[in-house]
Length: 243
Image 1 (cartoon, rainbow, N blue to C red):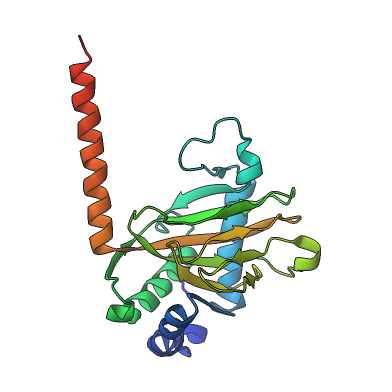
Image 2 (cartoon, rainbow, N blue to C red):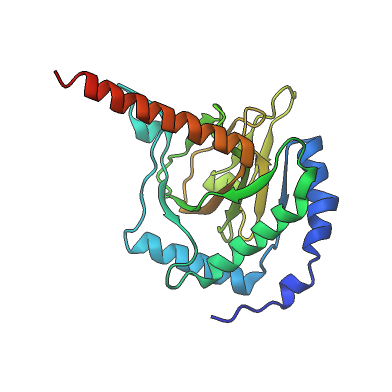
């Protein structure tokens, strides 16, 4: 599929990264861009996500850690699918991801202590509109390498008074909260660590979003090393217990 580049070419991605995203992240910890792809490409992304949903490709989102005795649906009500963007029919999604990658790349060494070399796959998420949300949480509370959370919203004619579904951020040490409506073609950035606890308020209409996480190279390498050590320790314990 050929992507209409006219809208994007009018955007100076480097200027947006340096003059807007970097200062906002440092000053308040989050920012968003509206009308990011334009209607034509945004519609292509939305149609592919709807197709995944209608085809039953989305699975219930998982919670980290043990939550014995608590109904998971009360904590996290979304259905998700992880994609690379290179799958058949995902050309518009791949184009979106490449633009976000360029924005983060242009931020370069201006992200404080972070050095970004890689990111996660994209997580397509749907709240089915049955009043479920996602309780207050931190994306990266324990140093798994994620430093920037980036969410692209896909909801046309969204009315938060009727439909709910607001992402509420509770910036650490601040006396205010920030409410972000999940509006079509809106791209949100925020720090992934304990600076930005956030929740998805109950949604009463089908709510689509796509999230990617960017990794700090050093923290990610350390997290992988710890994981390998835990796995190796588990294998050793298994061998010792074979008697």
